[in-house]
Image (cartoon, rainbow, N blue to C red; front, side, top):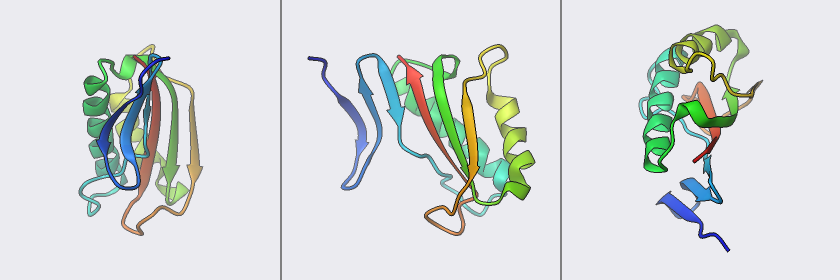
Amino acid sequence: MSNITRVNVGKRLSDMAVYNGVAYLAGQVADDSTQDITGQTRQILATIDKLLAAAGTDKTRLLMVQIMVANMKEFDGMNKAWDEWVPAGNAPPRATIEARLASADYKVEIVVTAAV
């Protein structure tokens, strides 16, 4: 049986669990929620890069991405940061939905699954 490794374990959740060669990230939100959606997305993607590195992987090995935006009218701003970040030729399967997020200040939340 493979071990489960958890990263940044809190009372309610871990930022990431790694099991059987797959890294599962919790929904990531911006540290500075005063930024616009492009700025928040850039912050989140930088956090995802750090978590993936901690698991020994990177954004070229993304298996699935789920993006929640608070307002689809800001979709293009999120995609601006996404398009700067996603590696050419390695765009993963992705779903984007509009959702009410945990704080009214959050404009975007991103969930990632990646091969290790």
